Amino acid sequence: MLILTTVAALLSGACNAGLIAMVNIALNHQGRTTAAIISAFVALGLGRLLTSFYSQIVAVRFSQGVIANLRRDLVRSILNAPLRKMEEVGPARLQVALTDDIYHIAQALLAVSLTAVNGALLLGGAVYLAWLSWQVLLSLLGLIVLGAIAYSFLMKGAFRSLLLAREEEDKLFGHFRALTLGIKELKLHRARREVFFARGVYDATEAYQRHNMTAERRFTISQHWSHLMFYVFVGSMLFLLPAFSTIGKEALTGYIITTLYLMGPLAGVLSTFSLFGRANVSLHKIQQLGFSLTANAPAPGPEAIPAGEEMPFERLDLVGVTHSYHGEKDGSHFVLGPMSLTFRPGELVFIVGGNGSGKSTLAKILTGLYEPEIGEIRLDGKPIFEENREQYRQLFSAVFGDFYLFESLLGVEQADLDTRAKSYLVQLQLDHKVKIRDGHLSTVNLSQGQRKRLALLTAYLENRPFYLFDEWASDQDPQFKDIFYRQLLPELRARGKTIVVITHDEQYFACADRLIKLDFGQLLSDKRVNLPQTERAMVAGEAEANAETAGASRQAGTLR
Image 1 (cartoon, one colour):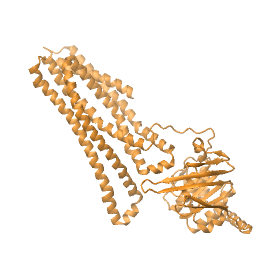
Image 2 (cartoon, one colour; image 1 turned 30 degrees about the horizontal axis):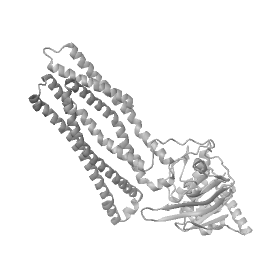
Image 3 (cartoon, one colour; image 1 turned 60 degrees about the horizontal axis):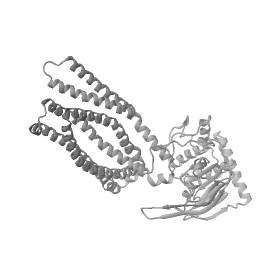
Image 4 (tube, one colour; image 1 turned 90 degrees about the horizontal axis):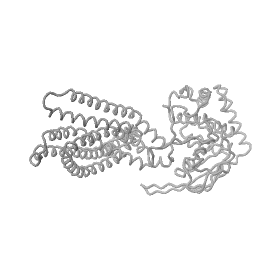
């Protein structure tokens, strides 16, 4: 696009210079205008229009995909970035990068074609001016140099204001996110709502507007300063040059006409500087986030396992694993570990501990979302490194405490997907509220407990060998909580799955095979739950009876 636009722009500039020459010749021609002058004028005019039209069409065709491509590249970079980095950046800054920053970069790219055309027009005009009188052109260039010094000073201040405005935009998007997520709390508390608007939204929008106004004011002053230099040059040629030089009328007329004509292309070039300034700030912010706009999609490894297929393992070990947090704002410091744990197929493990004890952090390390700072994860004795971490994560199906529920069963491609999903909906007691067709859920606007059941449905269909549930039962009613612990979990264990459950439900601790207890990031105990044989048989029999009852009443069968 850039090559084609540049070629078209150069041709357009040449045609434009020829047009100026024809106008000047026609004005100074003695007698009637000849057919040659008219033919040249028509040919050059058509050439100018066609080359300009072509360059703009190429730019428009390019513009239809540029924003989409940039956003796809940035999303791919975000998907490939470590989860810990995403959490440190925060959703507000990511949203600004995906919306405003990409938009400004795309607008600057699209302005390249316009700048090339206008630059070619200026170049063609300069060539014609040099042909008329190179001495006058040198004086013009000297005036341009003087004007450029003041222009650059004004532009530096404008770019500085743009950077300050961009910083305020991050804060503004943070307020927007708080508005959407905390709308219920804001509506219930009038004083909170008023302070949120007055000290949050109002102050941020005011600062954002102020910095933008300062930047635009400097851009406007810069443009008018360049126009002033043009008028000074025109006035000098009209009133000073004839007094000190014997320049001919034809050359003088050509200079005046050419200079006035070039004011349009010059204004076009100067107007793009604000676009380039905003794009430079946006690109700087994206680079600060640590993302690249040239990211490539990760190629699946040769041992990639399709969704829904088994990927068995014999044991999974955490060996001396340590992970730490350091909060820069509050100076807090939290260290998880060092700890060593082993997990095997067909094992039901509960992780317990108080709030802030490190349970969720351990879950993210276990599933490969966090990388251990010290120690390592071993799968069947083989260490997990960056090269095989993506493949390792395919072992897990998880429902985290802050889970997100997609409206489609993304990535689960199975011939009988709808049939299997419907049977699970019956078992999860959601068939009366949710329908499924071609892998699409009819609704996700449910209570939190019911949404967690839909998330569990997705985990079932993924059919991974390792399941992790982070406080899954906390939003369930007592009846379904009992079903979860005494029926669903034993069924998964019977299928040879490894299940890790983060829970506070002490009354169900006896259902686990192992109980891991954490406190302030330290492993306090990892012990097997020693149930009497009669009680273990009773739990197993109760789970089997519940499964048979559910299958008979709902004609759904047990989980496969």
